[in-house]
Amino acid sequence: MSDWGPVVIAVVLFVLLSPGLLIQVPGKSRVVEFGNMQTSGVSILIHTIIFFGLITIFLIAIGVHINTG
Image (cartoon, rainbow, N blue to C red):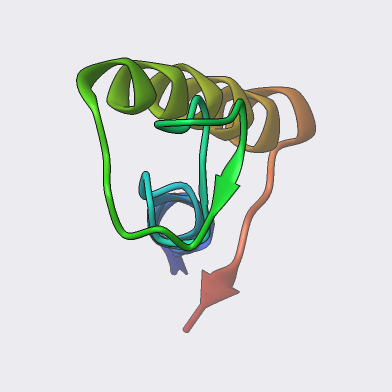
């Protein structure tokens, strides 16, 4: 049996937390900007920390599993 939970969670979080796609924290002129399709080094660092925190919560603390087969 295959466990697809980590793969699905990682892909969804990667798409949702891509800087500039949906939100950008911090933005160029404001703290939070929505859908501006731009990014910065600080924004990449903040989104990486948020991604790591959420993936840790979902996979280790909660233990999301999607079994197939």
